[in-house]
Length: 372
Ligand code: DCP
Ligand code: MG
Image (cartoon, rainbow, N blue to C red):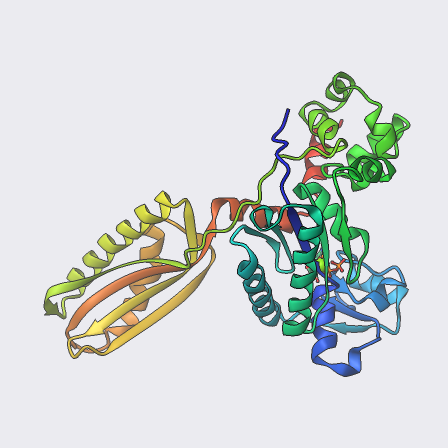
């Protein structure tokens, strides 16, 4: 049996996120079909579409060319990731004022564990309502919230009434909710599993629930066990907050100011190794590396580079640090202090999660490998 301690979990998901931001920032786009993504003349795909465009069958991950055919009047826009990221930070700050147990799943999506704040679902719903209100006041965007006793149900709940919804699934209501659900909506059921279930004559949660654990295991292996539990509303996954820490750095002051580049490189190497061990300890890695340098006259300069994938080892750090140092050492000016900092940290869990976000149907892919 899985961990069945009843918790109060919220799932929050902003509505038509990128498109809503574009409509917010440009009133001329409001009420219009807006598609954010690639070039409609090229090979790009739709990142998201406003609800006005969705009426025409436009959806995420669809080729833009097809979206244009479905909705010739659509206004196509390129994403403004920096703006979306800033809003994401703003919204996450709202969440963190309510609880430290916040697990972001995407820029616009997060789980919150509010068990310590509430005694019952109605109180959890109140927290959800407050958060929705704060998001609206501070960003002018709407979010849909799901409230339940585990992650799977909270996520199903937030998707239940979009946009601007608030759905509570109580332990009493969960069985009926899950029984009525098309199997494809159940966590862990991708296209492949859905098709195999359909071959067995199973299309709803209710039908799935009639299959014994043994039968499910025979048919789907380990996944069968998961399905057995999920369709019964059993999901023991915890809300795993991202690491609070923002950066990890080490610095050192020379005993005597120096202009010797070899000495500086060797010191940087030691600092990088120390940072590496700290990152490993905390099971994290950083995407932005910063070189800090204080001249003999105490003047401070910093230089940063961002890598495409997170850095954890000293050798890779040095590949970035050496050119940064060379850029600064144009004359013979003595240096007093050097420092190395890694920021933009990602936890290994976070890394895995991001991987999953890029491939939303990870389960389906796994299913494909399994099937003949
Ligand atoms: N996104 C993307 N590619 C995808 C799915 C999503 O680039 N295949 C981006 C654009 C979305 C954002 O991520 O705005 C959030 O994804 P959601 O799945 O939450 O979709 P929306 O917020 O756009 O719509 P909804 O109202 O259904 O949540
Ligand atoms: Mg969303």
